[in-house]
Figure 1 (cartoon, rainbow, N blue to C red):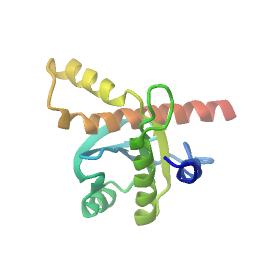
Figure 2: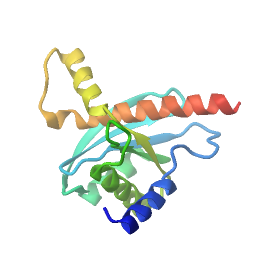
Figure 3: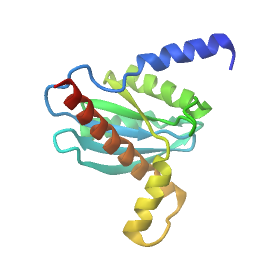
Length: 168
């Protein structure tokens, strides 16, 4: 990545907040586990922090069928969108991280909902472990993306509640 494009990326990443400035009322969120071929989706609400996997969207080079995304937003009526940010294990930016931020910006531009980023390192591994615990077997890779989105959103709600406790 060139120095100029890295600066632009870092500026864009900085505009993707981690949490709302002051969430005063309970709210609902859709989470996305972004991938080049599949995008996992989960839904949850902040009051209890409960989250459930919703679906896995097919993507072509990271681009979903936007009509399907619009239908999900219409059906679930989220107040916010949370996008998993796939940092490398050492905390450095990955190519997929850059694409995830672009995806978040596109979601915001199309649907005018606040978008937040959540570090998703090891969410897919955790999803595989959760599915194995629940079923006693490993399923196809395609079956983990919505569970990974669920884990991302569960972690986000937990981190949000912890950050609110610190400010009280």
